[in-house]
Length: 247
Image 1 (tube, rainbow, N blue to C red):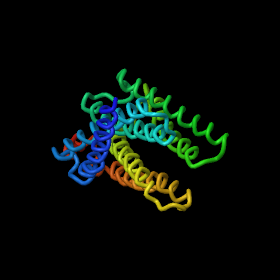
Image 2: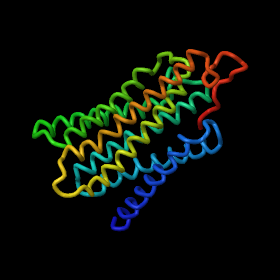
Image 3: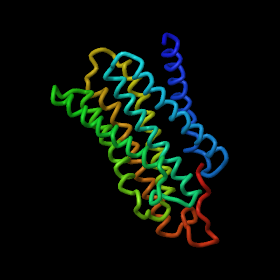
Image 4: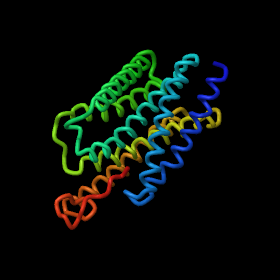
């Protein structure tokens, strides 16, 4: 155990750092290129390890409210990156969430349980006294619930045109925002003593708001191109093929 925990911590930090650095490459590189695809896969695997190691670190170390919260954020980021990646895999297999696999269902249902647990725990903390951590548990638990419940509702229902495309880039971008937020919070401990609590709280929540605005604008841009049969999104005209798979 003395060697396991340090090894987990070192590799956890390393995987998270790699994810933050390499995650920028798919966003900035040409969509569908080998560089985009390969670095995207590396990012997903890094986030998978970050989530798994976060859970193990929480289990093997003494209880910490802060560590519990970081574990929840890691699960949230893992869920977004995995569902974003699987959107492309399902598209390749000519499937959607209308015909989900057992893996897709279990992943979504387990994440739903985590989200309800985070919200419930946040409510419990708030009943004791409104605090910084109670707000964070509730806020990020609600975000996790929004995404996982949307997926659960989508199971068995038809999807809109280019669903996989929007699912892919919104989830991957959301995952990166969550990972970046965790990085900010960990380094937020460097705030000088006496810094108002709302400053730390803002460092956690602001990336989600800013990122959501950017994602919304990107979705609106591509939907406008889709409505106008833009070449990037057209799926009906043979002369204007759909974009190549992103992974």
